[in-house]
Image 1 (cartoon, rainbow, N blue to C red):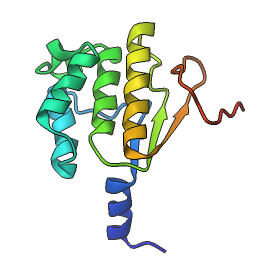
Image 2 (image 1 turned 90 degrees about the horizontal axis):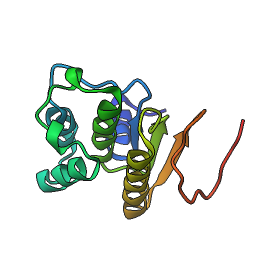
Image 3 (image 1 turned 30 degrees about the horizontal axis):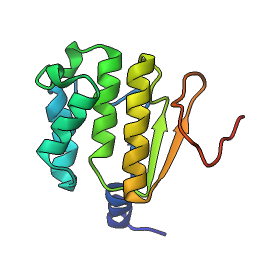
Length: 141
């Protein structure tokens, strides 16, 4: 059985999650939501984070309060937050459900590239739209 401290360490170093309901802080800006997690992990540079905002087409929203953004924009912010920590497993629940095809492809590639760079496993659940990636295994239930 793991102690609380051991569970915290596992969560901070081994498992990252992108929740379907996002769990962002609406009163904080997009950048603050991502920085909040990065301040705990010190895993990514400010430059890298800003490049990801640019890649995902939301650089113009970096200082916008999340509560004033569309759900698709919020979904991309939540994805960035999930990527600013080390992980062995990235669990992404419906990660592109509210994105257009172009942004869905960019986000899918970004998640896959980061997982590959970390030697990690990417686990995606989807009942509809899913990233078109080269999956090692696909389970249909």
